[in-house]
Length: 333
Image 1 (cartoon, rainbow, N blue to C red):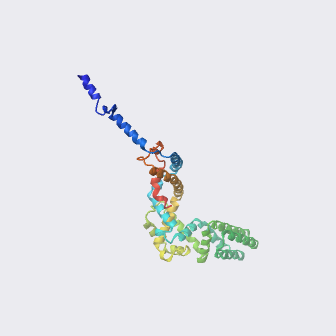
Image 2: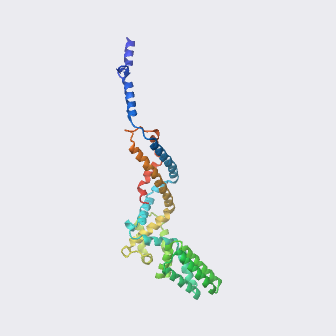
Image 3: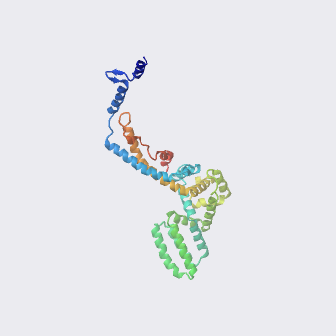
């Protein structure tokens, strides 16, 4: 009796013949196989393209991981990315201010050269030296090509040096030329020199003051514009003079504009190294996207519902997590 019951249990409905000698399990398995066999094969050439894209993304992804850092997602750094994008595109709060801010940036970066030029012109005022200073100013007003400017200065120096009586005076002229050479590395440097001379050479000293003000924020929260507004209002006279020299538009000649300038400069000073690293990451991400796009296009064109999926399609997409983290910033940089 028990033997018959056991046999009955063993011959459950799914293992009994559904028709002929085939059980339900066998039939269902064969049915699934038939569905898979009914799907089309993805062209081999397409699979090769997919594999190549994946391989390239693995290599790029490995490099991205070495650069990626938590500091790139910090609140202040993200604020700097937004501000820097506005500056680069001359949009938002910085609309119409890019050229003025570029002049200020170069002025602060080369402030030591401007100060040395001011000191030289103030201290060494012989006839020969004064003629040389006037000649340089005339050249600056002509808006010459940098190479032509430097060549004409060299010719004039060769003529002036024999007329200078002291070795100290000759050394001063040579030092003056060295500072001109530093300024000429950026065309804006020479433009600034002309502007400073136009308004008053003594205004060079305000660069030192503005730089010190910007540096005073090195350990402070830079996200709040109010802190910068207070400093600007305390030093209104300095920023009014600065605005004339760097050609701030009349409509934008407000304390808020100079507060924005200070905020940008302070953020740039603090995050300059991190931003350079982030730019390297962005370059890699844009390169990564070149391979990601065809890979996704292939997946859409050959969905699993209609096509047999090779094992390579099951592999995790390398670098995708990093890409999704920074995707929103790619078009802004």
